[in-house]
Length: 333
Image 1 (cartoon, helix red, strand yellow):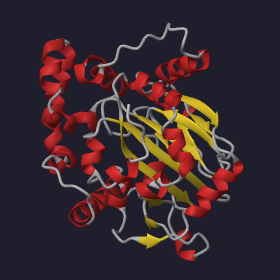
Image 2 (tube, one colour):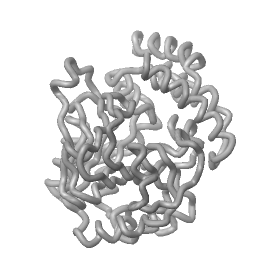
Image 3 (cartoon, rainbow, N blue to C red):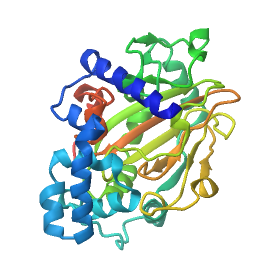
């Protein structure tokens, strides 16, 4: 009941922020964000999934309005839809090619099998320290997403006591994408190959957030296992800028839950712990959760790849989507 009341409070806050701080308006916002609109499309989606008529699934579920049902679909259902819709399967990747390193093939295989893979340590300690320093005086909001915050822009000062009152503070895309090492990573052909091969379509960055998580004694609703409702298929790149363990907020995940319905989620979950500069690719259609920081703090970047018009991009008012100028560094392919 407490979580339900919290979500109602957040919903009204989102409505207010949608008017005041969203980057772009969409006619689908109210359809996507209100559960009552999604239920009839969910029922029709269930009927289509039961009869498994590929033509009808493509005819109906390619319509944007059916994304209002995503929040009600389980992992197997989303996985089946993503593998069936033509617009989510436009690439013809030949993984048997000798030009593809075995390590890359193994990462793609692990992503498909378990819903995640580790990229290892991809940034040096100095690069991590410099990124953290670069966040000082940058604009941020006092929640895990700008739309769920109080709507007031804050200048980040890590030593100010005001930044210890809540569990999440989030920076807008430009704070992350202006950092040259991140730009080099996002231009890396191997990383892009892994992401696009997993998604099976040429992806776009539709969301880029960096979080600062201080010590908190308050359990956030995001600390329970849940699925994100971004789209039928998407993938997130997580970068840890400081060492992250169970004590300072490592993300937990239930392997294989992005494509299967897993029993006993708590028993099967693992923790993504890592050294500063380490990174992971994660399918957040799988069950995952944040965790309370009880010692130290956490700096983590979350960049999401998928379609431009995902469910979450619309509901979040496109404020987490990079602007064209933020992505000018990306190579033309």
